Length: 450
Ligand SMILES: Nc1nc2c(ncn2[C@@H]2O[C@H](COP(=O)(O)OP(=O)(O)OP(=O)(O)O)[C@@H](O)[C@H]2O)c(=O)[nH]1
Ligand SMILES: [Mg+2]
Image (tube, rainbow, N blue to C red; front, side, top):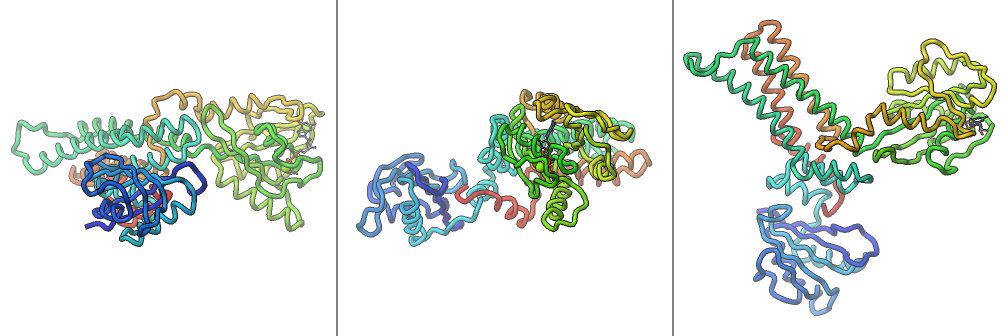
């Protein structure tokens, strides 16, 4: 028997109404103890009753109570939702009464965790709930609803199915070599099947990386020496004077962030302190922070000044970013050209932020680099969490091992082990094989009452 949990499911604060959710075997009994109106224990499932929440005989609030009996509920347990008037004092008082009468305060994400453990949702669908709550753009919302509805889970279920067919065929061949009506798999035949399968897996990984961009957005760091115009670019992109711009080198000392959306994809633009050797303690901290931003970002905009000769620091900085996704921009083309671009730095976009020239070209380049135009028009049946992507890649790794074993003419049962490992990694994505800690970890990211 599960204990009965409760939490305030709406955002805490002043509002017209708030919802307090109760789930578990005693949900209806517990609410019935503090409810004055119809006897809730006698109500049919999925009905709403009008009444009052009372503390002994004192009325706490006028409410509507929804009674939903297992199993057709979010958690597959008995669920009661109390619609109270919004406001911190009322909701907290009702919550307190529920706790006094036998409910336990739910952990963050515990309702969703129960939905998962009771087989109502899988882990991709759980991710979908979380992503939907957090979606900031319409594209992210659409992707999340596809995850929530099970459409994305089917991708994995179908992949696993294909793999199981190959595994089953191998097993029959090993265990029943005398069965002649079952196709005898040769190494070359398996190889073809596995190669086709591998292609599909790679495609899903590619799309999942697009999905990650849609839900999490793209982190863009603007990096360059002092005074090249980084803060000017941030302000131009955001269309506001967010960062201080002066002609003094080392103006920006801390990280400044702003958000904008391009083709429905959220971009976080990070303006950093100009990177140079400095003895100033504050500026030095800023420079170190800038270098850390390079690591964290998905895209680096590397900025040079058209009006200055290339410096040793420019080259050092370029070496730091050249293996990351990056765009080279040359700013201040309205001024005399003193910059001679070294051969290794290629395809620059030229800008004069002061005259608002070239920024559109930069945006276009970002759209092309991340395929943003295509993303917002595709059917958005993508995985998107870093966890799923890591597991897809793990699964792909095993497939690659299997192909290598086939090429080396290893015994077929060695190949089969790799295929089974690959199948298990896919199972972890939907939560078919999971450990208790992982589940706790995953659901603790949820907000309270979800
Ligand atoms: N002529 C010209 N000046 C520019 C242009 N863009 C920026 N500036 C000027 O260059 C100076 C430095 O600009 P910032 O945006 O503060 O440069 P920064 O890279 O953020 O500098 P730090 O914060 O010190 O690293 C300011 O005086 C800007 O007005 C441009 O396209 N042309
Ligand atoms: Mg600056």
